[in-house]
Image (cartoon, rainbow, N blue to C red; front, side, top):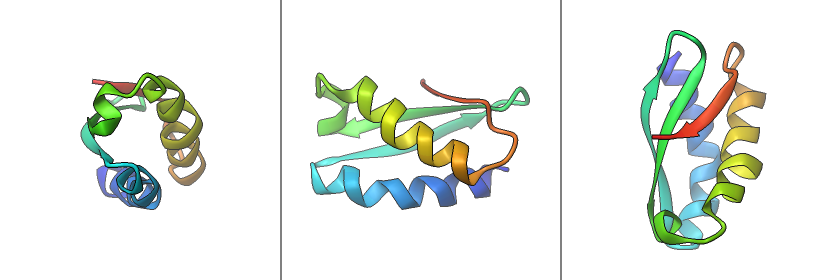
Length: 73
């Protein structure tokens, strides 16, 4: 499961990196919760929660069956 989540994050990573940020996978829980850490400029951006929901979570949920949510660690 972790490998599938990493592959999904790789699809969103170029967009984040273009703005000076990135995303790091922290954990995939047994309950289908993905915990990530936004880094770089994304860490301090006032729009980080919107980025997490509208970009990171949307792609992970679409790409990885069994994932229920993406949360910031």
